[in-house]
Length: 286
Image (cartoon, rainbow, N blue to C red):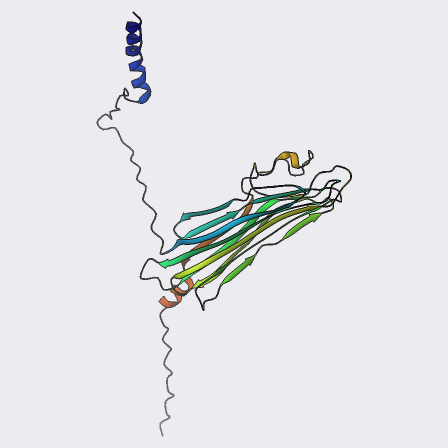
C-alpha cells in the first residue's frame, strides 16, 4: 500500500517538475506577416596596440606594534581591454595607545608588473602610453592624540636606453583632531613608445597611524583606504565624521593605456607644401 502511494505521488510530481525545468514550456510561434525584431551586436574592433602581462612581484606588508588593527591589503590587477591595465592597492591602519604604551600600525603595498607592448598592425609606427592615478579614502584623528597619513606613487620604465615616466600622488597627514576625506587624481602622464618591447610598472602605497601612550580612553587615529568590511566600526567614533560615505572605490588605483600616437601619424601624412617660385624681374628694354 505504501509503495502504491509513493508511486502515485511521484507520477503527480512529474508534470510540475517538467514545468519548473522548462521541459513543458510551449514554443512561441510568430504569425505570418508579423514583424520580428532582430538585434545584431557587432564585436568591438581589435586595438592597434595591445598590452600582454608578464611576470608580477607584488606584496602587502603589515607593520604593527602595541594595540592596533590593519585590514584590506588587496592587490587587484585587471585588464578590462587588450590596451588597458588597471591596478588597485588597498589598506587600513589603526593604532590605539593605552596606559601600557604607544601603538603604531602601517600597511605597505608594493607591486612590480612586467608587460609587453606590441604593435598589432603593420601600419603602426609609434605609440603613446598614458599613466593615470587616483587615491580615495579617509584620514581621522581625535583630540590631540595620534596621527594618520598616506603616501602613494607609480612609475613606468622601458627597455634599456629608453626614457621612463613617474607619477607622485599628493601625500596627506592629519593630527590634533583633524579629519579629511581624500579624493586625488594625477595624470594622464604621457610616454612615447617608439617601438614594441617590454616595460615595467612599479607601484607603491603606504597607510599608517600612530598614537602615543595615554592614561584615559579615547578613539584611535585611522587611515582607511579599503572598501568595507576592512575597518571594523568598533575602531572608529560613534560620531563618525564621514558616516554614510560610499566606500566601494577606496584605495590607490593606477590605469595604464596604450594607443597609436596620432600626432606623429598626422605629421607623417601631411604633404609637403610646394614653395612658390620666385619670378625674376624683367629687364627693361633699351
